[in-house]
Structure formats: structure tokens, C-alpha cells
Image (cartoon, rainbow, N blue to C red; front, side, top):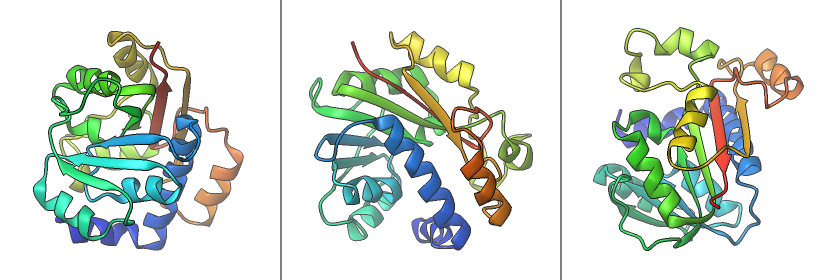
Length: 213
């Protein structure tokens, strides 16, 4: 999917609701005040990079796709930085950022351990992973048999698998949650979202966070 088409989906009522709901969970798990420095690894078109910048964070977005980085630069909030780069070989100093986040980008990475190790290396205070949840209605609809559309070839994580990934790099999760329990984004979906606890691990969007020792 080209960058403009990808962003056009986020401009729909459903897309806006999904992004806002996912971002609220990410922000809660990030648990750092505005002004903190943040690396968005695998930022794509900058959809969440912009949101973090608008919330007051000093954000750098990184993605291996030059076309998406061009789009992110052209449509940025004006305060963030966008760079082309590989998440498994980050060209940053150790502990350069307060936090590193990856919003669904890890789901398309072969070397997941290397990717998260690099996030840990450059982050002083917090790591947040936003993932596609294997135990969700969305997976039943879009994720089986290799996935459909933008989900093709994506890896869908369970909470246990996400915790094991953090453990592999020497971290234990200090917080987790999920969101978007009904992915259609209609009135019922929004009502259910307000009622179900975020720690219930069956939303389409799964997030885990940890703090380096």
C-alpha cells in the first residue's frame, strides 16, 4: 500500500477511532511526561510519530522505506525528525533517548530479538511495543492463512510471546494492555471499549512496556 492510501484509511471515521484508541494505550504505557525524547522505530508514514510530537514529546521517527520517510517529512507536525534506517542496526548512541517505541513495526521484522535489543540499547527509561494480537477478533478476520491486505505476512503475537521476547533481552514487562476489541469502530465497538478493562488481553492491538534496569 502506498503512503497516501495508508494515511487515507486513518482519515476515515473508523481509522481515526482506531488510531486514537491505540495511541491512548501507548501513551498510558509510555508513562513519561511531555518533553521526553522518543525514538519511533519503524515509523512508516509518521502517523504515530506526529501524535507523539503533538502530545509534546521530542520525537525522531525511523523507517527503512525512503518513500514513507519522505511522506512523513512532508506531513509532519513540524517538530519531529524523520530518518531512513534499519531498526536492527540503529545509528544512535547508547541511551540516547528517554524511550523507544515500535508501533506494529516489529510484526514485520524477521530478527525480532535484534530489533528489541537495539531499542533497549538506545533507550534510557522505557521500551514500548505495540503489536498485532493473535488472540483477537481481528486476527480471526484478517490474520489467518498468511493474512489479508496490509496484514499479509505479519506476525501476530500473544501476550505470553511478547513477555518472552522482553525476557529474552533481559527485561520483564512492567505494564501491558490491549485495545480495539471490536475492530469495526462502530457505536457498539466504542461502547465496549469504554467498558472492557485495558488489561484484558484480547483487543486487536496489544502493547507491552518495560523499563531498562
